Image (cartoon, rainbow, N blue to C red):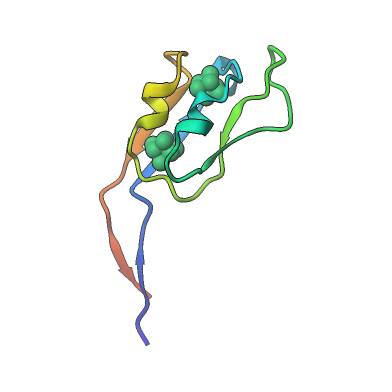
Length: 83
Ligand code: SF4
Ligand code: SF4
């Protein structure tokens, strides 16, 4: 049987040392794929972290973040893969 799998539409990259740990991106993400890390960054903040799957590329986290260099969102073209 063929199984259709849709790849994630987006990917988010967080520069941990630019993050001030405010949590706004975590609260704003509609699909809840961001979490606060348990460890600290170089400045003593718990940085936001992408769980690695499920980003839609909506960009809400980017606009929610007060730190201009902390978050980059990459868009992917949706691809249907048959396995
Ligand atoms: S781009 Fe959208 S879905 Fe992806 S992590 Fe940011 S808020 Fe969440
Ligand atoms: S909104 Fe920006 S500064 Fe705040 S936790 Fe998310 S990445 Fe860090």
